[in-house]
Amino acid sequence: MKYILVCFLFFSAGFVVFSQSASDPSPDKTIETQQMETIRYGTENEIAALIQALKNEKAFYLDDELIVLVQSTKNRIILSGVFSFFGERGKEGLEERALRAVKERNDEATEAVNAALDYLGKVKAQDAIDPLKDLIDRDEQRFMGNAIRALGLVGKVHPETADNTAEYLIDFYLNHNPGDENRREIVIALGELGSGQGISLLSEIAVSDDERPTLRMAALDSLSKIGDPEGLQTVLTALVSADPNVRSGAIAALGPFSGQEVEGAILEAFRDSYYRTRISAAKAAGERKFIEAIPYLRFRAERDEIPTVKDEAIRALGAIGTHEAAVVLADLFGERKNTDRVRILAAEMLIQNNADDYAGKVILEMDEAKTKNQTALYTGLLRGLGTARTGAVEGLARRFLTSGGVVEKSLALDMAINNEFRGLAAQIKELTDEKNGSLARKARDVLQRLGLD
Image 1 (cartoon, rainbow, N blue to C red):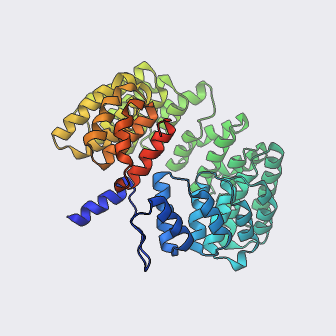
Image 2 (cartoon, helix red, strand yellow):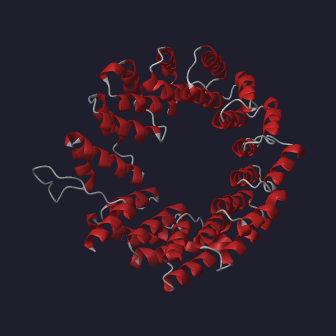
């Protein structure tokens, strides 16, 4: 039982237990000090655990220490972890080290080089364009996919660069026999570049019955990302494909396009027997805030046999955000016969769009769920309320800070920062004691951001 409780705290609140060295850290040291020592002296596994903890807690105060660390290590686990941690945020500072890993790839672990390539793409490092092309030209298969993806991201920063990069990739696709998987990566990269240079090749791929459905779907998605009206007819042609996956991809690709023909195609897609096509229709309706689709979305949210279709219909209603859509969401949330999944997602949409009007109702249902031991419903509604931006949750936040569990206190801190509840300063300060672990650091951060430290 104690083991289960420890695991729950570990995953729910971001508590991290680090392996200790031969001489245990002094109990007087702060968590931050112990973490800095882990970076400087820890094993690859200890550092990997620390990086994961920082990701979970969205804590970035050790970035400078991590930058220093990667300059002097070739450890694949450490390099991959730090490149990933920085790349997910688009955080600059590792470009030089990443380029060194690419240029000296024979001396680096494959995993570390691919992580470096991904990082260069995510931070759109302009100095990486020529090294990426050089790597692709050398046809080193273990790096090809990551290099092509990175080039698509790096090359799109400037229109002229995007056009030149697209021409380079098209030539490579047509004349260098890149193989099926790398062909798909090139198709995806052309979409990321957003250059009109790629429309002709992408259109040819999208309507070809001789191509694999996955490649055709990737081409449709790339035409959608480019968003040029020149690609619309190709997308409409793909709507009548015999392959249900291609039809689904075509509906998903309609997002940036407009006109009655497009809107009619979206409504018709709600009738498709293939569930992914209905999902794509719901997403398209939400993206364009398609009011005429509300009755279709309500029908799908209430009666579709596939839970993921219901999910996307509810999200689309939230994205549309009109009074009519809110009424549908309120009905879905208020009907206790609906599944917890439907009610929780409908509540999230209501809180996202109409927190002042619906937070109180969600709190009542949350408390009712706790009384009835409906744990999944209680937890789902609780997490939705943690994102609310309304004064209506101040009382709930105070209650959680005073008597809630670890997860509830953490969400109360989210409510405090989201709504600038400075009146909760006394309760928040009580959490800053080091015995509260990661909650203490989060509480100090909230106080600082509210100007109360």
